[in-house]
Image: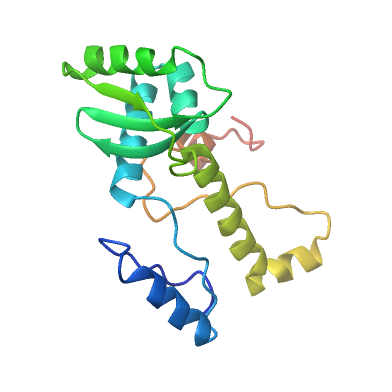
Length: 183
């Protein structure tokens, strides 16, 4: 077992989290610390990002990924801490579009609380952790030793792959090839 193999989820941080982290550190276990992310809230924001993507609103999708810190979420109400790069009318635009897309009135409010990291930053940090784990794998290190100029361009999960998602990258069936091996 190694650092990063265990994630502990708790319903409430207090009074349990601080003593648990103290004891884990005292026992010599590597601890990243208490994450500020509320899992269910973060999943809800991912749903909003997916909705903006489905509606092909890339500007709003990017704003949700990169320009706000989620403070609180419940159906019909979102509380965020906009980053300085956020457009001044972002919250009004989000309210208007959510009402149009869901048929429900949404309240989107500003908070002075710091909130969770922007979802885009969280995703990039996760991708970097996965890349580091991959680089540390003995089989990958062996390949990189034989091909020193090789680099890992991306890490993709195949556990939940959607059939046909990478259909454009598949080799054509042999019967579709001409005698010289071309299409």
